[in-house]
Image 1 (cartoon, each protein chain N blue to C red):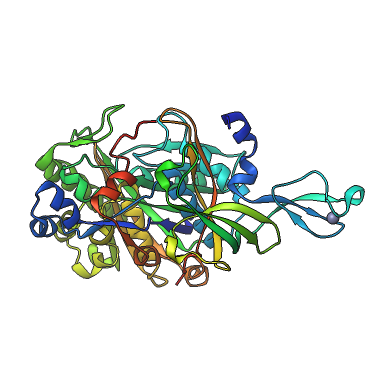
Image 2 (image 1 turned 90 degrees about the vertical axis):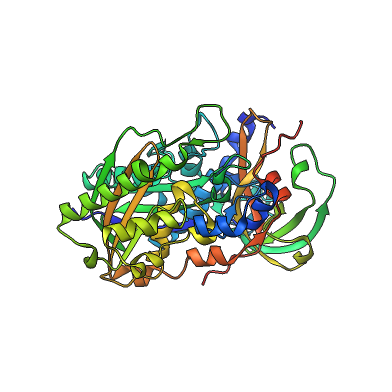
Length: 348
Length: 134
Ligand SMILES: [Zn+2]
């Protein structure tokens, strides 16, 4: 059975903070940081936004594009490392808000930045086996970096939702391949507000090892080579890592440019790869083939080969695009940012 | 408001479920048990209203009730839905100086309030200027 994407939707909050604004507070060299991370600014959620609200807006767009009855959704999975509750699934709020409830299975996923693609894989399995008709997979985050930490320049908010099914596909997912190992490159202990990371350790043994081996594994499994793809999307914790990974694997600058959003919105964690794919789907033509490789610290990578169908041209156009959300922005200063992201505790 | 009472109302908070009177074809929000025009001849049915309308009037809140202090100043408005009913709502994603009477708005799912740092989080619908698609 063919399995793939019936519709997708995105959300990026309108608040932005520039690297200069953060660097000025912590005495950082803004130009050096921008060059090093290849990030200019990042998107941040407002006071009344969180992973659940991001998931709802993205999912409502995905439903509108797919044009399906939400009651036909048999599974809802939300991947995030910033679920609003420690205990109480975001997927329950989402299921109710989009009226997929009550007859459905649901759960929240956590796998650093790749929880959303893990949700896509689960839905592929459930749809492919005939257990459900449609599944909804969301990757969304309102990521936090500790004040003054390098992560503060990139940890951003945003998300994307994909409806996975087997009919009326706008894109077929032909294959997926994953690599997972126990790697302590990045973590956050229960009850701690900010994550910690292994500094330079996050590069070679974590990001590159997993992204490269998952992508290579997928290419081998599908008997495809980088030249067979029109686009490639890699997880983008900064602008440098995906560019280096692409080069090492033999993908060109032209193949990855369309799906690289980190420079303008930061690293949206579970949203990052899925937003990159959405940006490509906003533009791709029928027949185009897309390689997607997500990465999550801890660590693992999910790689996908996706081919766009004729249906995309009729289903696209009514829902807001990634660029629509990137275009609408309001810059805030560090003080406002601290308030929005609740980095100060207000006595109650 | 406690969690149980809020929870019973999520259907009309997460989406705009009102009632339509089959006799006079008027829509009501929030849902009511009897049509005030038709009384005993009321034929009320649940209806999902389109979350779009326009601002009838608005005010800027500088001194907010408990739980909303962090958001001041913010816009509260009476919105007339395209299908008739009026409701009071917060207008978000809009600068105070950009608010105006007659301004078109659309529904958006947001956090309404939370009971402290350890209580439940309440979600529901607010309104914003329509997003430009394309
Ligand atoms: Zn009536």
